[in-house]
Amino acid sequence: MTNPASTVRLRKIGRVLHDLREESGLTLKAASRRLERSTTSLCLIEKGNQWLRFRDLEYILDRYKAPPDVRDALMTLARQHKQTGWWDAYKDVISHDARDFASVEWDSADIISTQTAVIPGFLQTADYARTVLRADPQAPQPDRAERLVEFRLARQQILLRDPPTSLHVIIDEAALRRMRGGRTVMRSQVRRLIQECDQEHVNLQVLPFAVDPGPAYTGQFQLLDIGRPPILSLVLIDEITSRLVREEPAEITRYRSVYNYAKEVALTKEDSRELMLEILSEL
Image (cartoon, rainbow, N blue to C red; front, side, top):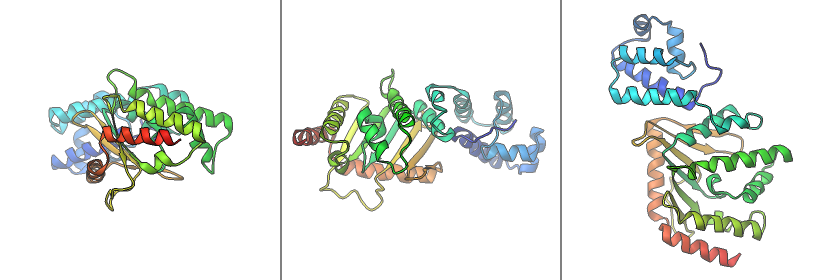
């Protein structure tokens, strides 16, 4: 039974099963005999292109003698993969991959977001979001654009539920001073950010013009962690025509170190709030 499209969780499950197989000293052919499954099927599973029933996943984990923590993590990801959520209501305007990312955001315990050009989507007001969407050279038709605004605002539910996702944000000073949609829109947006500074689960820091964040700072990415400690981590990078996903542990570590360095040189949460108040007074 093949899945029509791969997901972040299926790819993670596949990578771990691949590692468990190799740790067991089994070739793909030997493992397929032990599991009574074709090599083609097992290869698809390890690449994250085939869904496993829960009992089949448990059987493979038994045969590979997976440690309890690994078993629990993979079964959790398998259950999450099958879940439905608010994102399914946006199939008319949002791609399969975008809905998959939204579901990962929903299950994330911690999210890191860094931005240089715009306010992060999790903290945008509706008017600011509309302005950003209209500025896209490939801006959608008005009706579709409004649905995309709804989708962006729906993602913000993770900050309102109990318990909320912990959001760690670094916003470049340029994003705060860049005029988008006029003074009224910007005043409302900056006020929203100041209010978010008062939330315990939101750590918002501003990277001022006066500091050097280092040559490795790319300025725009999200790092998501499911679970504490994480059972799945990934980095999302939005580009003009696509969204890149980084899932390899070495890449995750690299982006986390970039964030940690930028966090150290950025203003504290309290000083960031003071700078935003100053910017608001100038608008």
